[in-house]
Amino acid sequence: MIMIASNTTVDKARARQLLSALHDGLSEITGGSASSEWEALGQAMDKAEHGNGWFSPSEVRHAASVWSRALAPEAVERWLESMSVPSNDRQPVTVGIVMAGNIPFVGLHDLLCAVVSGHQVKVKPSRDDAGLTAALIGCWAQACPGLNEQVSLETERLDGFDAVIATGSRNSGRYFQHYFGGVPHIIRGQRTSVAVLDGSETHEQMQALSEDIFRYFGLGCRNVTQVFVPRDFDLNRLFAAFVDWTHLGNHHRFYNNYTYHKALWLMEAVDLLENGFVLLKEDEGWVSPVGALHYQRYDDIADVEHRIDEGKEHIQCRVGNGGLPFGEAQCPGLSDYADGVDTMAFLLGLGG
Image 1 (cartoon, rainbow, N blue to C red):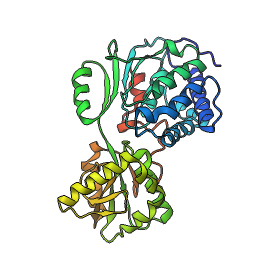
Image 2: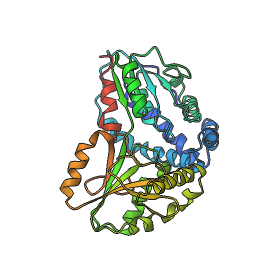
Image 3: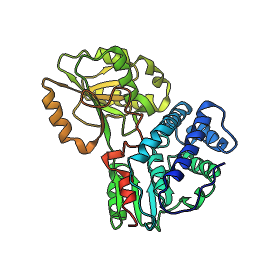
């Protein structure tokens, strides 16, 4: 058990203790040997699918393992060294965090940033969160006494805040702008990710791309939903790389989405390619529905660069040619801030 002092300014030693405790707890759970302090989170992870049909045990545990790796001591050290430490006369404020619920632990980065910043934190999980955030905060507070005095869980309307970080859909983003516009804020709407292929990719790279596409059933903002391919690219290469994900066809929600859009587009005489669980549709839309993947062919890579630049407000990340390595989209580090907005810089600028 780690005792955490109740000081209200960022302290790197305190941050190391907090993040180390969270790393150890997630590592215990994903390793199958959770201590009593973290047992409740492990149980919540196992039951999450009952509250959100997209939160299968394998996906929830995968998300926990990604965070365990992100919180490795060397990664934490690099992150802490990249930020400045505010002076001790900085006044803490109350930061509200409105979390999305599209993938497991999607709001964890905002939470740990706010905790490390030293501010008071009010957390409003999504109704789709399935109890994961509450269980994580509860277990983290058991491992780090004093944390429960800094972080509170809000089940009703969020109020009593000095600043806000809110994440949701495009529609909720407009509501957030209206409701939170009077205080310092970071407001995020829906984004997606793209892949750019040049045709030289190996089969192994294409298999890694399938991780970027299908992890979390394609519901995350870092999931690839649009693929740019050369004019003469053989799309069967994608299907060959997707073989390891055929089990998605056994997931009723995923398969229902696949069959619905297949029927809809066939009635509209849309040209499709499909393999029994995913539809390939030539479409300029950035976001493809669950069970489908949009693609665009190109003759000149400069056209792709122009198209991506035009759509940058819709894009979270890019993989492949000119972007992240294939297979890395769903493994963000502590310094990979959503929408390219430095959350820690925002938080450290409050209360000055």
